[in-house]
Length: 288
Image (cartoon, rainbow, N blue to C red; front, side, top):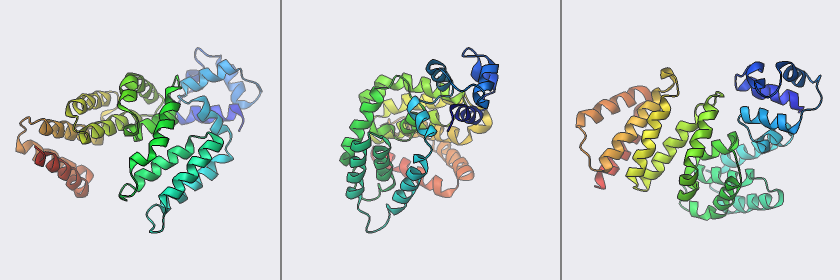
């Protein structure tokens, strides 16, 4: 795919005008020429400035330019994850094969695929996260070398923050939030909340309730960056975890407050979601 074509595609997907993308980087006329291919070459510094504003890393950009590989990877991911629940599925063989592919290509995709496979097959007791120590170590090493996180990295951080060490999260927490806030301005508004939500759940599961409370407070603050119509689910979940943490810490909460909250959850998300969240709360209460 030609640079101009891809830059235009990324700009449109992020709902940026040509003036907004070009501002401070080049003239709008130059950007029009790049997108229309009347300007054949683009300097590396100009390209990197565009990528920064488009919130995408050079690695991701190069991957998108080479669209030949993407359909194959998409099919591989879909086929593998569909096989996970089959009785004859051998996770150890698939993990070993993906590790070999990573060592041959240095493509992080294969290690991330193992993480996704673990997550989907987590109901199987014979697949333990500890078994993926190699994947976790390689992924974290990769992240530690990056100066900036693009969408690929932000997606992984948001969906699987628990695979990273506590020291990595704590040392990079402000950097991650800053990058995700920047991504929100480009129309990518789900990443920050998902990251904070999954991190809150992780600390709750680890019984680190004070840490969970701190992250939960950030969840509330991030909602202020979004329109009210877009935060119904996020607000409910933030409120739920706030009260769950308070329960775990032994702080008094009125029964009617929970009843009111769960009534809203059931009305908004359905009875199945309500039952699942209520069961989690009851298990926390039972541990006290």
